[in-house]
Image (tube, rainbow, N blue to C red; front, side, top):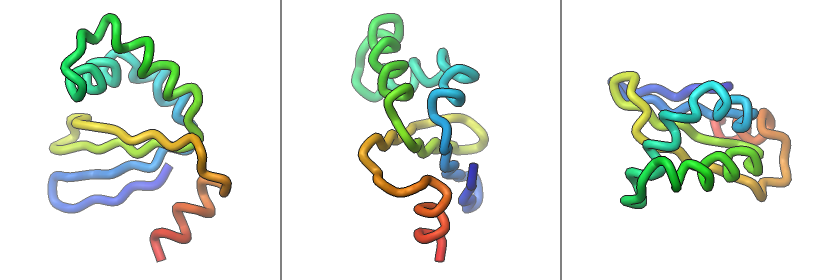
Length: 88
């Protein structure tokens, strides 16, 4: 996992999204459901599936609170190589 931080904002690159979801699923369900104005109980199933399929994830935090995420499932490069290439 790699992190970019600026003041109170943090972006984490997660190279094992399924494991991250296992540890933080309920919170991620709520964040995803809120983004699409859906109930967390029903939208959580979609969030779980998307984290399982993803090869990479970005987790966005403000003042240590998760406020969003982005999932990537079609990136053909190794996650660590991609992050290093973008950080240069």
